[in-house]
Length: 388
Image (cartoon, rainbow, N blue to C red; front, side, top):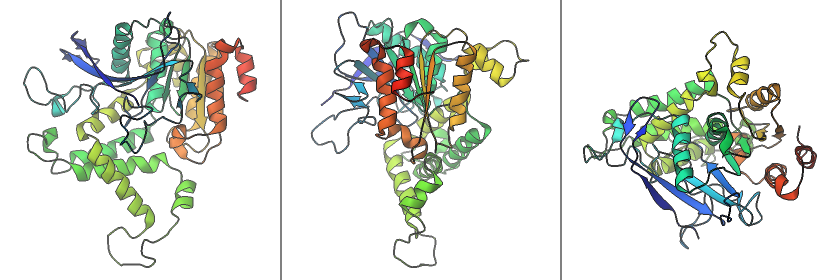
């Protein structure tokens, strides 16, 4: 059983968009025990629809544990017998941290669509503020999958001396045009919902549920593979025969509608818009001054001051953030003579593979994290995990 806590920050937070939050809250969950010199702390950064609840249960009535329960806990890859694990919910989200559904102290009403756009850099900035409040000067490791991997990478760029290890899983140095296009289709499905009311749906006592369902359906398709959908659903019909209508006749249609409906009941539409925009904006090489550099050269320049060993993990069937995108990060680190291990895991689950219990994946992360504890070198870790 785990109990989340809300941590308040009364220091004004100036964001990249040049707007300022006068104060904000972060929802935080911790697992394991912090040692005396605070050298065993690991920060977990969540993906788009994730939250602070990464592992364990909040009550005996919970039907499902935290979103990364297979990865975090006693004797698991991130072993809470050894590490003190912290997971927070980012600002702009809808799981307790300050976001669109929170009350704006200046108006006494929910922020709604007036909540400022945030970036990965903004999230990392708030995470350093949390680190200071927890009196953790240096994280033993910062770990994240998908959008969480972007945060881990940004940490290594912005605060290179505040983490000893960086684990980037199923991620990318920046979104491709195709990924931005998927996000735009998802946003337009929400923005065009007649119940959206320019983001002020709470004041109108409505909710753009249909738009959010469509947005999630689009996103969910990109997280899976054609092979996985074929194996799980094929062209199976719900009733066994054509009904000659527009209701859900195929099993895959029913599945997508179910996933979209369930998601729409637990997630906020304004938050979805914010999160996808943060994904679109992410690019650690954006601050590189020389505009004449190629993308590869700009990424190399952005990572030149990183100071910790990296583990980069990709999955063979992930076409949302393909292995080639992870390899861009690896190549930039190698070009800078930075210590990096890389593994491409054969898994059938597409982008969602990072959430699954896969032995080779588990071992790669466990060996990388435990190397210092065991007295191993990076070469030992590479051999043990069959890494490149």
